[in-house]
Image (cartoon, rainbow, N blue to C red; front, side, top):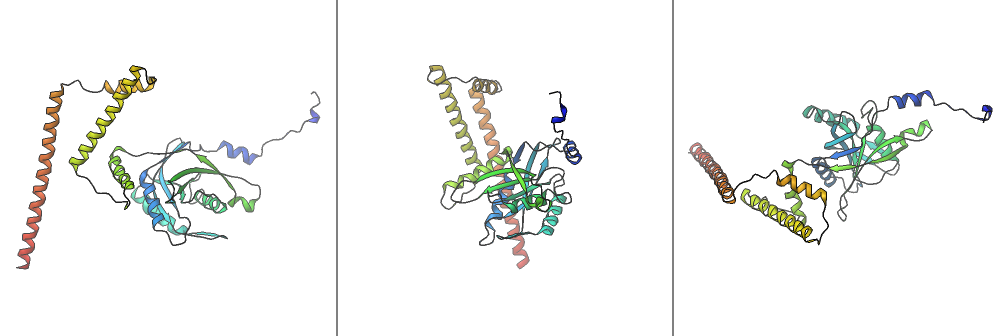
Length: 307
């Protein structure tokens, strides 16, 4: 081991060391908002006949450390794809991005989507365009979202980032390795009712549903709460009887939530609830009365103009 002449010493190229020193953090999690998925599905329904997949731009926000990306919205980008080549309307992409950015300055370019799970050489070309220095996400990697929209199967969503591979300079633009990144669907509490209404149409053959009234929605919510309470009570009873194994995490969760419940007499709670319900009914009645008066006023105004 004392003969160092038998060893081959290699040093890193300067360009590689510089690239690693200035590397940016890669995203560890992708958060997808429902609005962007609805835009992608709408684009799929409006695609040209015979077009296998559609592509578009993803907009959203990036965390300060770059490890988390939120996909908030998306817009379609026209493209023509054949077995030999792919053409993208880049001017349309730039124009639409500028309009979206003016309307929502906080949303920036984060990547692109395609309605196909296949990754090919064309995917690499498009990925390199969205990761470019001039019009892309550089120095951050672009996110590629693939979505399976076949009506005969469930919707499948996958997200990727990429890194260049290969040694030939003339092939570097179409050679990249797609690395999967975990993703999750997240929505606000204010969007829950709308999403549940849309999801209720899946049980109808016509895929149509009607908007229920506020009272019916309140009744449905109360029934769901009662059903959840029954399930929790049955679980606690089964644990006490020894028929089901206990779970410390579930017990702590139930204890923390029950401790937040106000200590109030059931009769007093029912009285407060009925009073609040009467207030809601009064507001609904006044709203309908004002609406009727406005309609009557417009009808009298049109009659006066005609006469």
